[in-house]
Image 1 (tube, rainbow, N blue to C red):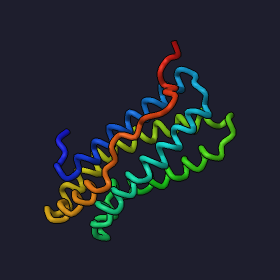
Image 2 (spheres, one colour):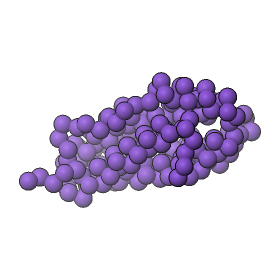
Image 3 (cartoon, helix red, strand yellow):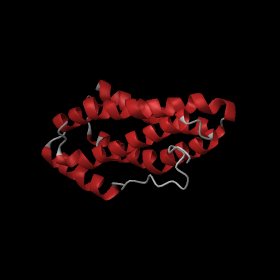
Length: 161
């Protein structure tokens, strides 16, 4: 999918998000320690997803008119951002017996969210914002862009040898 230059860095972050979802999935399939996977998911949520969502909301969504804010993709993006926040809080408080289902929900929501943004939200933004708005957004995105933060001391998603 061809992405406008202004949104490319957010798309790169989406690639990282899919990698994080895949790591959680692999960890679950390898029966890795659920508390370790939880720590990873919460870390990703706090240090990658929260800043990424803020960047999208402040650089893109804040430039939309009231009428544009009612677009189905925009509404769903904002709902999913809130859902991630609630899920992060649930993961932090969960008993070990609850972790499996919450981690499955986390990785599935992450994949669903990236698809929504890449297939519907970003195309809407690219069609809706004018070139000046997109240039201003790009400056903010460039300043707030995060390089891959996936280093983890014990990669539970790799089989033990």
